[in-house]
Length: 145
Image (cartoon, rainbow, N blue to C red):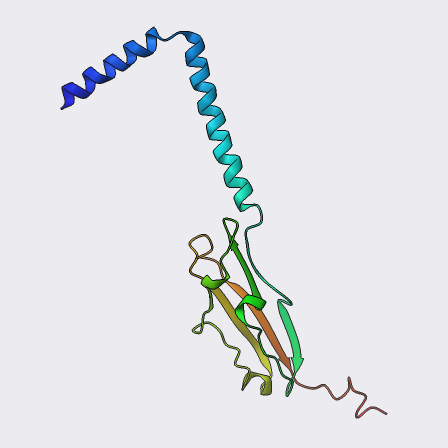
Protein backbone atom coordinates (compact mmCIF):
# COMPACT_ATOMS: atom_id res chain seq x y z
CA UNK A 1 0.00 0.00 0.00
CA UNK A 2 2.84 2.39 0.80
CA UNK A 3 4.47 1.75 -2.59
CA UNK A 4 1.23 2.37 -4.45
CA UNK A 5 0.70 5.75 -2.82
CA UNK A 6 4.28 6.83 -3.50
CA UNK A 7 3.98 5.66 -7.10
CA UNK A 8 0.71 7.57 -7.47
CA UNK A 9 2.28 10.67 -5.96
CA UNK A 10 5.15 10.51 -8.46
CA UNK A 11 2.70 10.18 -11.36
CA UNK A 12 0.72 13.18 -10.15
CA UNK A 13 3.90 15.25 -9.86
CA UNK A 14 4.89 14.29 -13.43
CA UNK A 15 1.44 15.25 -14.73
CA UNK A 16 1.58 18.60 -12.92
CA UNK A 17 4.99 19.34 -14.44
CA UNK A 18 3.56 18.59 -17.90
CA UNK A 19 0.70 21.10 -17.42
CA UNK A 20 1.05 24.44 -19.15
CA UNK A 21 1.83 27.34 -16.81
CA UNK A 22 -1.38 29.12 -17.78
CA UNK A 23 -3.44 26.14 -16.56
CA UNK A 24 -1.55 26.17 -13.24
CA UNK A 25 -2.31 29.89 -12.85
CA UNK A 26 -5.99 29.31 -13.67
CA UNK A 27 -6.21 26.50 -11.11
CA UNK A 28 -4.57 28.70 -8.46
CA UNK A 29 -6.98 31.55 -9.24
CA UNK A 30 -9.99 29.22 -9.03
CA UNK A 31 -8.76 28.00 -5.63
CA UNK A 32 -8.23 31.55 -4.34
CA UNK A 33 -11.58 32.80 -5.64
CA UNK A 34 -13.39 29.78 -4.18
CA UNK A 35 -11.76 30.31 -0.79
CA UNK A 36 -12.57 34.02 -0.83
CA UNK A 37 -16.15 33.28 -1.89
CA UNK A 38 -16.60 30.82 0.98
CA UNK A 39 -15.22 33.36 3.45
CA UNK A 40 -17.49 36.15 2.18
CA UNK A 41 -20.54 33.87 2.19
CA UNK A 42 -19.84 32.85 5.78
CA UNK A 43 -19.32 36.48 6.79
CA UNK A 44 -22.56 37.60 5.15
CA UNK A 45 -24.54 34.77 6.75
CA UNK A 46 -23.29 35.72 10.22
CA UNK A 47 -23.24 39.52 10.02
CA UNK A 48 -26.49 39.92 12.01
CA UNK A 49 -25.86 37.10 14.47
CA UNK A 50 -26.35 37.95 18.13
CA UNK A 51 -27.24 36.68 21.58
CA UNK A 52 -28.48 39.69 23.53
CA UNK A 53 -31.04 40.84 26.07
CA UNK A 54 -34.02 42.84 24.89
CA UNK A 55 -34.86 45.71 27.21
CA UNK A 56 -33.01 46.87 30.28
CA UNK A 57 -30.02 44.86 31.47
CA UNK A 58 -30.49 46.30 34.97
CA UNK A 59 -33.94 46.83 36.50
CA UNK A 60 -34.20 48.84 39.73
CA UNK A 61 -37.30 48.79 41.90
CA UNK A 62 -38.45 49.29 45.49
CA UNK A 63 -39.60 46.61 47.92
CA UNK A 64 -43.22 45.73 47.24
CA UNK A 65 -42.99 46.60 43.56
CA UNK A 66 -43.57 44.06 40.86
CA UNK A 67 -41.50 42.74 38.00
CA UNK A 68 -42.40 39.96 35.64
CA UNK A 69 -39.76 38.85 33.15
CA UNK A 70 -41.28 38.67 29.66
CA UNK A 71 -41.49 35.42 27.70
CA UNK A 72 -38.12 34.31 26.33
CA UNK A 73 -38.86 35.40 22.76
CA UNK A 74 -39.57 38.92 24.08
CA UNK A 75 -36.72 38.99 26.61
CA UNK A 76 -33.79 37.85 24.50
CA UNK A 77 -32.71 37.78 20.87
CA UNK A 78 -30.64 34.90 19.55
CA UNK A 79 -29.64 34.69 15.88
CA UNK A 80 -27.12 32.10 14.69
CA UNK A 81 -25.92 31.82 11.08
CA UNK A 82 -28.70 34.15 10.00
CA UNK A 83 -31.47 32.05 11.55
CA UNK A 84 -33.61 32.74 14.61
CA UNK A 85 -32.28 30.51 17.41
CA UNK A 86 -34.40 31.89 20.27
CA UNK A 87 -36.03 28.48 20.69
CA UNK A 88 -32.66 27.19 21.94
CA UNK A 89 -32.57 29.76 24.79
CA UNK A 90 -33.53 28.82 28.33
CA UNK A 91 -33.32 30.29 31.84
CA UNK A 92 -30.64 28.58 33.91
CA UNK A 93 -32.70 27.84 37.01
CA UNK A 94 -29.62 26.85 39.06
CA UNK A 95 -27.95 30.24 38.64
CA UNK A 96 -31.07 32.43 38.53
CA UNK A 97 -31.74 34.02 41.91
CA UNK A 98 -34.78 36.17 41.07
CA UNK A 99 -38.20 34.83 42.02
CA UNK A 100 -41.03 37.26 41.17
CA UNK A 101 -43.09 35.98 44.11
CA UNK A 102 -40.50 36.51 46.86
CA UNK A 103 -37.60 38.65 45.64
CA UNK A 104 -39.73 41.78 45.22
CA UNK A 105 -40.36 41.75 48.99
CA UNK A 106 -36.70 41.54 50.01
CA UNK A 107 -33.98 44.10 49.48
CA UNK A 108 -31.12 42.72 47.38
CA UNK A 109 -29.63 42.12 43.98
CA UNK A 110 -31.05 39.26 41.97
CA UNK A 111 -30.23 37.73 38.60
CA UNK A 112 -32.03 36.05 35.72
CA UNK A 113 -29.47 33.98 33.80
CA UNK A 114 -30.07 33.06 30.17
CA UNK A 115 -28.16 30.39 28.27
CA UNK A 116 -28.60 28.64 24.95
CA UNK A 117 -27.99 25.15 23.65
CA UNK A 118 -26.94 26.66 20.30
CA UNK A 119 -23.33 25.57 19.72
CA UNK A 120 -22.20 29.05 18.64
CA UNK A 121 -23.18 30.66 21.96
CA UNK A 122 -23.17 27.63 24.29
CA UNK A 123 -20.42 29.05 26.51
CA UNK A 124 -22.05 32.50 26.81
CA UNK A 125 -24.62 33.67 29.37
CA UNK A 126 -26.75 36.78 29.36
CA UNK A 127 -27.79 38.16 32.73
CA UNK A 128 -30.57 40.55 33.69
CA UNK A 129 -29.96 42.13 37.09
CA UNK A 130 -32.93 43.06 39.30
CA UNK A 131 -32.08 45.43 42.16
CA UNK A 132 -34.69 45.68 44.89
CA UNK A 133 -34.13 48.69 47.16
CA UNK A 134 -35.67 49.58 50.49
CA UNK A 135 -37.85 52.66 50.36
CA UNK A 136 -35.82 55.69 51.48
CA UNK A 137 -38.22 57.85 53.47
CA UNK A 138 -36.03 60.93 52.98
CA UNK A 139 -36.32 60.64 49.21
CA UNK A 140 -40.09 60.92 49.48
CA UNK A 141 -39.86 63.96 51.72
CA UNK A 142 -41.10 62.08 54.78
CA UNK A 143 -39.35 62.84 58.03
CA UNK A 144 -37.69 66.07 56.86
CA UNK A 145 -38.06 69.41 58.66
